[in-house]
Image 1 (cartoon, rainbow, N blue to C red):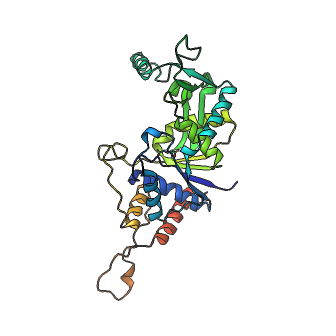
Image 2: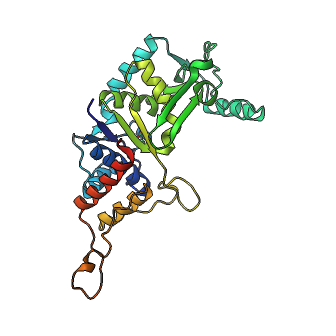
Image 3: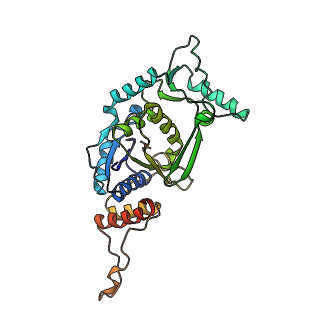
Length: 306
Ligand code: GLU
């Protein structure tokens, strides 16, 4: 099996330090394995997509010397693949229509919380809509022991989630007709034959759902590695909304070195390398992109390539 990894940004704005860290981690993992690295533009969520953001992200990756081995994949061009997978799940009886509004679900979760019960979708429409109009489509998750999904994350270690009590039947097709991220990502990773998923830990909680969906579709499960998310001073995940600042594209090595440091890798500047020479003062020589990647990949390989 040859290694295939990916970086899958949502084009909701320019790359920031948080998304650069994810990009760098997936790039280093692919290089450390001598594998293939692709970029997927996750514009499945039409309303959240910002015009021009995808092109901006691709240009920024190029500026940082991260060149994909294949042309980028755009989710907006893959509607028929999602529809086909969805139809297969419907035919297999895994999917049912749901008439609940956001408001109804929120209310039921509040009352569940008050009873210290589960926060999962309560399965209101599992046994029919009782004359109400369908809105979204949900994947039925199993009950009991079969609901538990265990996996080992290469960074975060052993993980376990009970889909029935912690998540509940989850949406594959939204009430606005859009395909849900969970379905798109599983179909895309399978079609691209992705063997290793490396991304931010904010998606750790989605992974059990994706593994379950892979089982329903009969596709293989990649290895997962979730890197710690970058937060701002208030501990919020970095995003445009939480005040992420623009990346310094004029000093790509220094910017990448900052991202690497977040991954626990020191591979930025060569400190005082010139000291041995007849210089009056030691000085810092910035590394080239190639030298940076060589050093960072070697560090990554020590930790993550057995
Ligand atoms: N598009 C998602 C994001 O930007 C990442 C999805 C993934 O890596 O699976 O947060």
